[in-house]
Image (cartoon, rainbow, N blue to C red):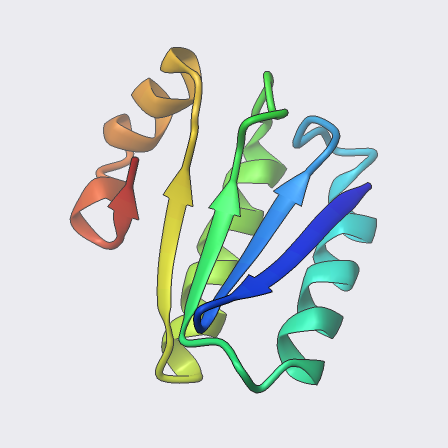
Length: 101
């Protein structure tokens, strides 16, 4: 469901499925477990290469990961979004809170 790579103080989470209501609870649990178990990261990157759709609960997941990273004094970034997801993120002005590539 999610691939994880830790390299150069960066934890990259790459969901292999869309951010739909049916997938989010399991994705959330997997990512949070990884964040809490891994101490060797300073930057959390949510790689959206394989994400083609974003539901409102998916937006909540992104906000939650940003807040969790911030509470742990870590950085957060979203990368490789398709144009429609990028538009949604910019509509909510997330690009003012964290890096979006």
